[in-house]
Amino acid sequence: MSSAELDEMIKALSHPVRRDILNWLKQPEVYFADQEHPLSFGVCAGKIDQKTGLSQSTVSAHLATLQRAGFISSKKVGQWNFFSRNEEVIQQFLTRLTDQL
Amino acid sequence: MSSAELDEMIKALSHPVRRDILNWLKQPEVYFADQEHPLSFGVCAGKIDQKTGLSQSTVSAHLATLQRAGFISSKKVGQWNFFSRNEEVIQQFLTRLTDQL
DNA sequence: ATTGCATATCGAAAGCTCACGATATACAGT
DNA sequence: ACTGTATATCGTGAGCTTTCGATATGCAAT
Image (cartoon, rainbow over all chains, first blue to last red; front, top):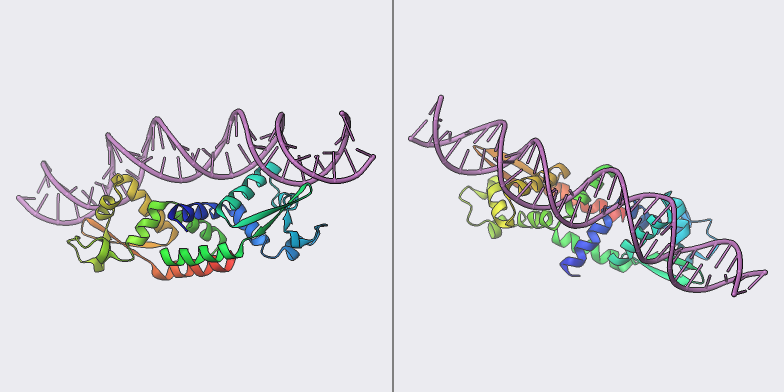
């Protein structure tokens, strides 16, 4: 992971809503129990919109930021977009940060 | 460490120059070998100014940000101000982040 | 007391981030 | 084709961050 990538990752984490989202995605069955689609697809963008209380466009941008940083991936199914954590990347990030700090 | 404190800490790390400074302070004998004062005091603000290449006032603000976040402490000796890392706080931060992420 | 050095604080300009509503795109069902 | 739903993208305004030079503060030496 390059220094520029690390920078992008830390910046992605530097907004509380984005950290909340990452946290919710850790236990979808707890935070998104009401999702009609199987949680194995990931969590549907709309559900995340609801949970934050922010506007649809704002949350879409936050999700894009997290994805650009590599922390989450999306999987398109029909008209829905499902998001889930990249545990490996998150682990790598923590290792790298622990090293570099 | 409260959620607000964690937020302040992550924001403090979200600028590359501040991460550089933290990093340099990890091995002062490597990065500040030319300091006249004993490195046991910490590293003198002026030395850090030089190393960044930024203006004195800018670096002073970065140091204040790192200190407010708890990552570094300062010790005034005569007209100089010496900065050093708070290893314990840094460790706690990493533990907390690993937990919460 | 005055001068000089080290550092902090102030005020302003430039740039970045976040939030929103409006619009565009993409798919599904009729 | 048309309508509705889900999501992304665009444009904009408000607020925050970063940077600087200038100024203030605090200490040391003359």
